[in-house]
Image (cartoon, rainbow, N blue to C red):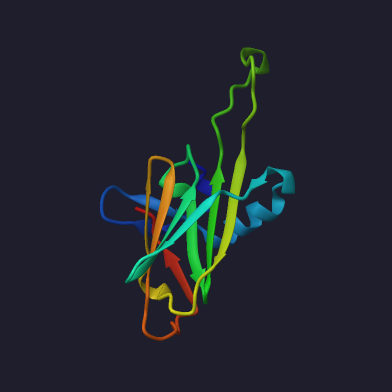
Amino acid sequence: MNTVLHNSEYSIYPGHYVPMLNEIDVNEEILRTKQNDIVMPLVNISDSNGSYKIEVAVPGVDRENFLVYANKNILSVYVVHQHQMVNDPKKFRLHEFSCCCYERHIELPGDADTEFVSAEYKEGVLRIYVPKASEQSTVEHTRIVVY
């Protein structure tokens, strides 16, 4: 876990203490990362009667590496993922992945209620549930915890 990007004043609860990513540090890390190293993950969006379900394919990361937030009607998903590197490159027969950042922004419909969004990460897929509201949400910025 990269402790530089985590802020101890935020935590994911219930369960064991897992600090959440610091939003400012993640944005700075994304800016420092080469554009070639930023991956835009694949997304599925489904619409049901009472909510929208957004599935984001991000295999092989830990849930504490997610930064998910809604800013007005834009849902943003960031992942700063660092693979464990072996110091001796001769040990690899093939080495195709290393450090990677994921970034995806999704425009939400006008009836999306960004105040009550929930998210879970399981088996390599981040699932985000956005309830529908009868009127447009007035919340400017919502931080979303990934369970």
